[in-house]
Image 1 (cartoon, rainbow, N blue to C red):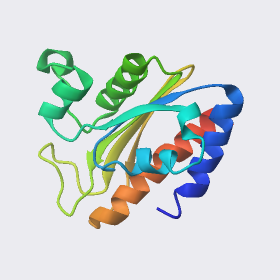
Image 2 (spheres, one colour; image 1 turned 30 degrees about the vertical axis):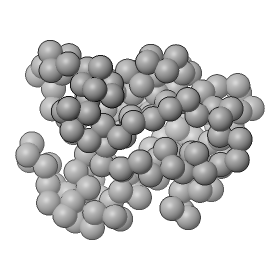
Image 3 (cartoon, rainbow, N blue to C red; image 1 turned 135 degrees about the vertical axis):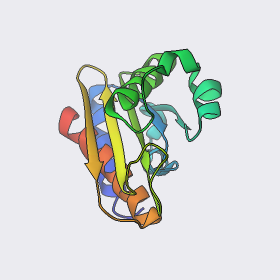
Length: 159
């Protein structure tokens, strides 16, 4: 978490200065992304909410995305990450939606992705989705790496 805090502090300061808000939908980062952003004093000025969307049931109950909305889409993909980011943004009426979805490890996911695979997306004034492969089966290390990559993506777009 210590390596995430400086990034979250920079992001929080920029979001506050710009009077922008963010909502999070994360999966295999397990809440680390939200926790880092919320660890910054004054986070209520920019953090509107977040969800750990780890299962299909969570996708339906937390994001109100039924099976039909993801037809033809697999969960650890850039299109799915972008759908989550847009949905988080829209549901919270935030400036930005930031999402992460992948396979933390130590094994891969049912779609054939290796551990260390994640897709991260940002939806707002700019939309972007990327795939990251750490090549590492270490679950905790991947969770931190995924959250760090998401914060870095956010910073790149708002700096």
